[in-house]
Amino acid sequence: MLLTLENEWSAKTEEMKNAGRSAVWSDITDMELPVTTDILKYKRITVTVLDKNTFKNDSWMGKGDFSLRKLGSHSGAPLLVTHTVRLKDKRGRSAGKVLVEAEIQPLPDIVAPSAEAAGAALQAPGMVSFLDCSVSKVAETAMMGKQDLWVNLSLAGWKNTTEGTR
Image (cartoon, rainbow, N blue to C red; front, side, top):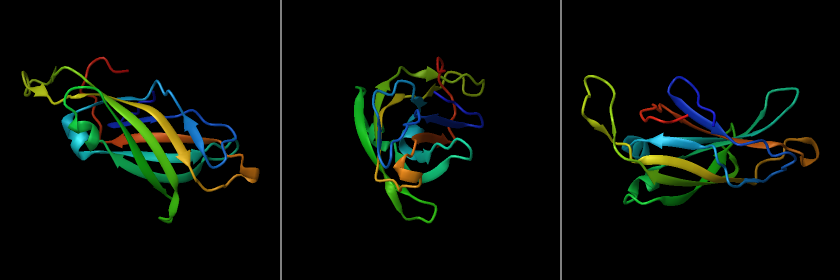
């Protein structure tokens, strides 16, 4: 999993060689995100699809987002949800779609480390795992449809408030 600084979480799939307009990543094992109740209620995961290029910057295929709210309505048991993300190109036109399968595993309450919040339990309902991801109907930008697709998932404003994360 790729964790970035400045309070932003992000993770990306491997590049899918010669994917064309569609690609599927199954059994993703390294995309995990510890979440608080506030993240589940109010934040959105941004999904960006790109075409890997060797000699120039990767081509931006489309972008969209989805809410984790459905995962926040669980009753303490693991919950699996599939999100459909409609992609838009840089001009706001339809640019395909991404299906993201996510699961939340409940975690025990974690105590905040700061002095002013000593003894206060954080609302940390669990760890979200992104299990599968599929892209379909993206535009063809490469010669002869040999696009090497990859997907980036990110969450701005994320703060690592749990212990034991990577």
